[in-house]
Length: 279
Image: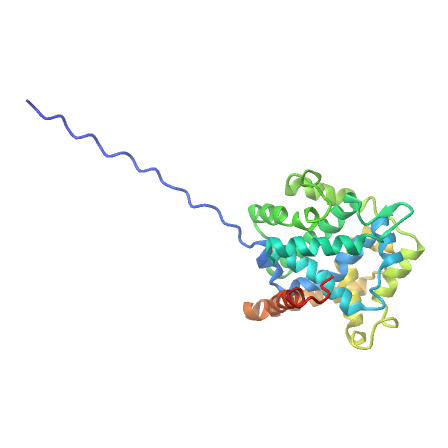
């Protein structure tokens, strides 16, 4: 009896390596260079009337600028770098702080306004990263976009309120440019934030640069709505600054660039552990 030939071994199917994003939200937040967009994120928020009115009528930034910066960065960093428990705690604190922020035609609990605020945080962070390091690939942009939802969904924004894809978000961002409006109170507040005269003594030396970057990072529609001036000379100075940053910033060791985020998270955890005010 002739033995049957052995069956051939099964064909090995090549396994495609799982795609990994170039950077994650956590990587993004560890880049101190993103702080170069902090002022413009605030201005974009002010350019939507409901947010601008609430901030102009209730914010204490002018009285305690350093503490307000700290609390804002606490939310930004904890949502991207914190644990689930830390995110939940900070979200509850933000909700308590938002409770009195309401007036005729606006409320800090309005999910549409919260969506816009969250969108500015995610979009300005992405823009600052690309200004420094160059364009990100499309899958990474999609991944970062989805991770950025946490800035809204940690509060009252439902996941289904977010545009489903990065492309749809781009359309939303463009549509919002046409909905910017303010009033004299909001414009005065925006001008005061950028004023050298109104700045605290320790900020005054940097005020001209902060003003240039904040105004330059904005779209023309946002500058127009807030009554912020912009000239050809401003544009030249702005472009020179970014040319310098693109050369110098990437040469700083990554661990050094990450120190501010690490320090901020360490301070938040210390405050939580010792019962001190976080937000």
